Length: 485
Image (cartoon, rainbow, N blue to C red; front, side, top):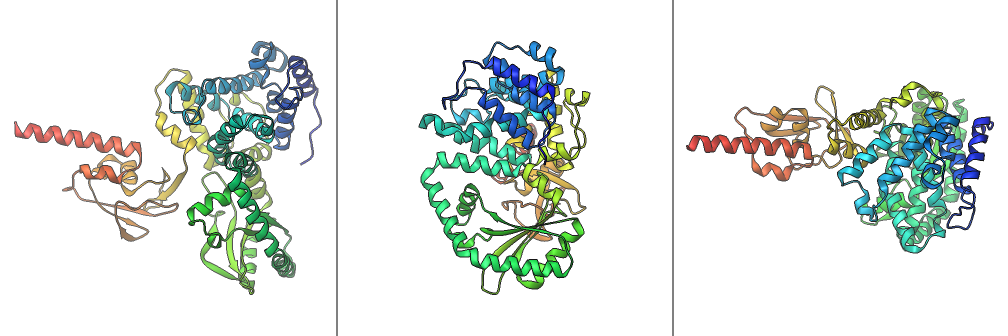
């Protein structure tokens, strides 16, 4: 993407920030203006709109200098002031949170402020992510205890939020930089492991690239082919799932193929499978069924003639841009302009998979009006992984990862949850202790004669289902006591 020309408004914002931060220095010893200028550059790379870039330049002025929100409003308009105010509120929400464990917003007041700050306009969050990225890039200037605290906070809060916005490039960079400070020995060990693996695989990979290129050219397919290196933090998490056995991780060596349209993606998949043996259960079609954050691609893992295991990722150019830059890319593609909708806390043309953002914005609006909201639900939406499962009729139900059949039943309706006698998962009888997986088809079996049992409390994961069950158990107890009288 070409770098946009500096507008007069952006140049004016830079000059204001330069004067406002004069005499202030970062821990690195550099003049403070280096930081807002770095945030500006990151936002430009992400293709953000002019107001977001200006707000990025000015994001610390209200908190750290004599510049007021009214000054910004008069000079740059309501929208920029609104964004700077949001970033300032987000910083205020974190004030006094000395420990990462209290930062994950468990306290009501801080969580309310955090929601209001983020929910008012999602661009506030994007500015904050750019701010955090530059801070984590320059973390070496801080003392070791602060390094570790900020790195841990980045891993546990900011990187997952980047993932929720499908900003893959950002998530990877943030996670790896932070992990280096959180567990330096483990980081170095895994870094060496990946480098050694790549050295061993280099010759074989070059041969595969040649074979694939030749086959695709024969089919007259236009394509871009590149290698993809697995991130260190991603490998760390995956090895934990596989008992630290690197031989069970099949996507260490990966090739990415970018083509012109969706139809060609499937054609390329056929070409790959005609050359190599696909591994059973390792073809994942995220084009037909995108990940919850909007990620789309086809993944297939194959075994080559020399027994090398290789993963291929096949996607269109737009899918690739979205996989790398996420919501920022959707701003760019949809040519988002500053409208009254931004001020109202709405964003037009959001992909369906990002509707949780709309929900967040609606909740923020309710909070500003002093209305009651379901904070637990929003906390799950923001800070926990979710899975999508289906009813036999094809209706989609989203649940937190780790949910069980009773959670699903109570999510459908209390009457269904109260009368569960069994469950079928993907057409087969299962039990109520079975964790639900992404894409499962879940059929709840009920009987009018069944009533809720206290033993079900150990078979429930979500607070929603637990509250419903406890309510029913209390009702049942009162009824039984009434009969005894």
